[in-house]
Length: 336
Image 1 (cartoon, rainbow, N blue to C red):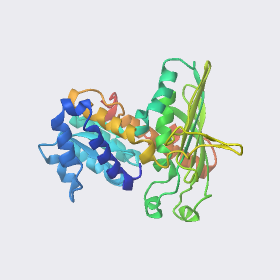
Image 2 (cartoon, helix red, strand yellow):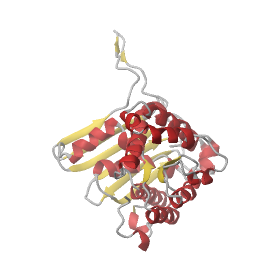
Image 3 (cartoon, rainbow, N blue to C red):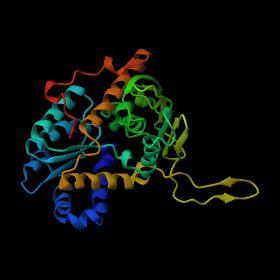
Image 4 (cartoon, rainbow, N blue to C red):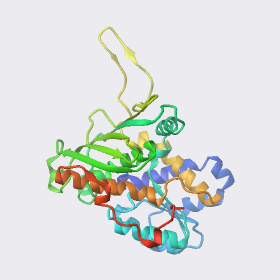
């Protein structure tokens, strides 16, 4: 999620969570979140020391995440952190080591896992409803490019935009990616190219279990936020379409039409943000396992780095070419 939107939407999500059953059972922790975690502070890294805090919600710029994760872990606070943890694998590993050493929970903010539509796709795969998965396709196109100031420090389209799709591919297929091949172009804003980025991308992925698929991205879909996917299996397929503000279809002698899809992620995924934060609070209060671990946060970064290498070198790249050895301190840890 772009950092300039993150803080607003996360605050909105926490507040929308408040009337839920979680609030009825856990008023104290919700109110602490509203009182402390939702207020911008000039010295955020010092806030986790507050003894009244049980957990922190990190929605700052990506290059600040790991310092804040480490500070929160050392203070014994459970952590919800927006994606990506970082764009550097070595830095991510340092943050994960701090989390494991402290014995705190870390949940990474891949909100689409909590969307009811994608959850249904996952259910169809896990239950065997469509048989053995063979092919998948994800379409993810924004309605407009981000500000150039954001592009400068975003890490590029694969680490900023496609990273959600890399996570969703792993989530839906239920396995890890083995190899990627990325194509890209600058079709929308030439200024993006000046900062070493692209605005249009198609990526093919090969999974360890043999599933193959594609992800296509664009920074501008003139008709709105385009979010679709399909998983095809040996017994059938499951797919989802865009969400619309209404179900009305106007039919006349000249045409059949409907309104445009929801325009941006703040409209399309609001409920998923609410659900993921609600689940995080429940994990903290009930001492349950988090649904999206630090390893889940690390894996899409490896894919994104491989995609970038593939694009620049014009060839398929195995993830083993860019991944780093797991530090000894993290061997055998499942992220919980």
